[in-house]
Image (cartoon, rainbow, N blue to C red):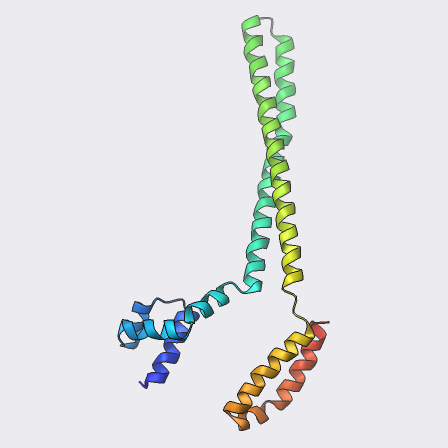
Length: 190
């Protein structure tokens, strides 16, 4: 296998498959130091990290946190709805029981239930604050990471100019694609 082909495969394994240098070296039958040098000199770690932290994936993670908090809040609200009925039943039992010791015990249970209910309500407030904070983070993220059509065109031109320098024939074959793609992008980024 040619050295450049091995290097290209190593790049793919490291950045896309997230394999480690030793695994790649074994798979490609090269020295681990060689793969380590490729990773270091080619800034592959930075590239892999950037791919992992792409805006779409970060958005998904933020949205997942919001969803998890919302589910947790719903579960707590279901529990809270059960407390009034339990408290009413115990209070009714207190009125019906004549034994003072049992009444004291039941009143203690009522107080504990009211305390638990209050704690759960407090938890929902904290969860609501968390959801609000994450929603604000999400809104800021959308604002900060919005790509304008102008910026998109600049990047596309850099890519295709680099292609032109690398292979003029290939560049010429992509002219129709470039045109169609920019028309499509114009509808997305407006």
